[in-house]
Image (cartoon, rainbow, N blue to C red):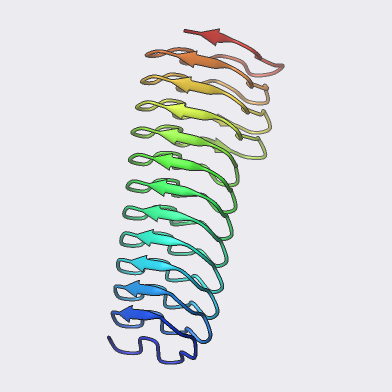
Length: 220
């Protein structure tokens, strides 16, 4: 239903409602798109669900994605097994897979990172290529801008937990921060801040280290 929806389809069991929805689909089966431009670039992708204006608009051959929200997952191409729910959730994701991003602009800048679980308004907003990150709460792990630094296998639970972390080459792996603003705003350039645990309101907040390493700290 809608102008140019499913105009090239040869696949089976597809449902499209909205102008240009699934407009490029050829042999891809079992896709559902509801909203203008939703899933419009899908060709052979299958088992995808797109609900919302421009949801999954650039997806081509991706599989098993569930996208709900205006502009959510909008530049993704081939990523698989992702769940993006909320306006502009996972909007920059291209090939990352096995991610869950729920909330307004959740995991907004993720491109190729995989196996992340994110829940909350702008949670993990700046996560780009990092994997196995769990961020739950308002702006949890927000703006964790890493240049070539690694931020993987870390857990941030609580409002603004791990917020505003930045580094150029220093790693920040396998950290656990639980509590409002726990692990927030560390000062780190090339230092390695890994395997730290902060539990409680403001635990390990503003951890300072520019070079060297800061390992195995526990604050409860």
